[in-house]
Length: 128
Image 1: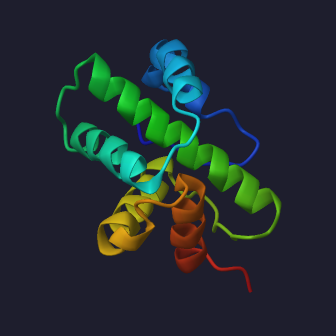
Image 2: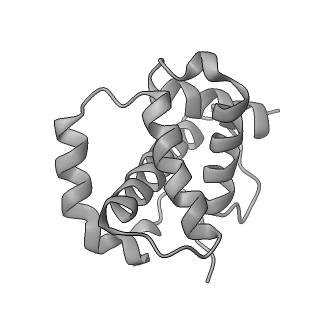
């Protein structure tokens, strides 16, 4: 079953990543300045998972951290009309868009991950 993005819905809670939420919270608090390069590295685990690879615990935490971060920023951007998602955009789609953007724009690797996510999603889902 594909991950579904829906602002206001807790789709992340129904995913298998919920088991790693504790580790996600600890790693996020320990690393308060999440930058584009870290998000890119975490999304590599997400991409491997989407391609059928079995991830170890570190890979699962990286996947969960990236997916939760992008979903959180996506929800904030959508609720403030910064981006306008069409109906039924899947979480995996937003992850892939952000990863593609990060790979094509290494100049944002040292920026805040939120900046990279915002630029990627505004480019793909502009509001009219």
